[in-house]
Every structure is written in structure tokens, then in C-alpha cells.
Amino acid sequence: MDDETRRSVQVMGDRVLVAPPAGAERTTRGGILIPTTASSADRKGLWGEVKAVGPHVRTVSPGDEVLYLPEDAIEVDVRGDSFLIVRERDVHAVASVRTDSTTGLYL
Image (cartoon, rainbow, N blue to C red; front, side, top):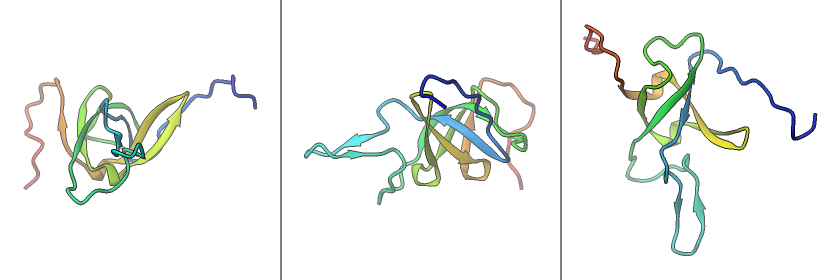
């Protein structure tokens, strides 16, 4: 298959395809690029926009913003754009414009 062929991408299982925020990759003073998925000592979470979800995802929809730890994600390249694949259980919070009557908290 040549480089110009476009493929359809389907997210599987309980996975969420997330677009990382702009500037999520860091560069050291020496010019070394640190990828979004590199683990760090501060365990800083990132917010990213959900682009697609797998068939077993129940609480997240495309267009939502989710909070996740970069080291829990798999970095993938889809048609020249960088995305992250995160398990639904590794999503720590969801911000959306949907208005549900539930709080999303489980006691």
C-alpha cells in the first residue's frame, strides 16, 4: 500500500482517541524533544479533546474534554496527525457541554 492511500481508523474496545493539547510536547534547553507520553516525576495530567471512542466506552463522547496522565496513553500517528489512545478507565475526569441529570460520581 502506498503512502497516499487513506485508511479508515476505528477505535476498538474501551479505548478513547484523544487529540493532545497544543504544546503538550516539551523541548529541553538542549533541543531534545520530550514526547507527550513521556512519564514525569510531577505526574501532571493533561486535558485533551476526544475525537473517537470504541464500542464499549460508556461515559465519554466525541467532543468531550478528558483529563488523563500522558504516561497512560499510547501515541499514534493518524494521517500525519498525532493522537493518543487512552483506556476509558485511565480517564480521570470528563468536561463536556452535555447536560445530564447525573453527577457522574459513583459511591
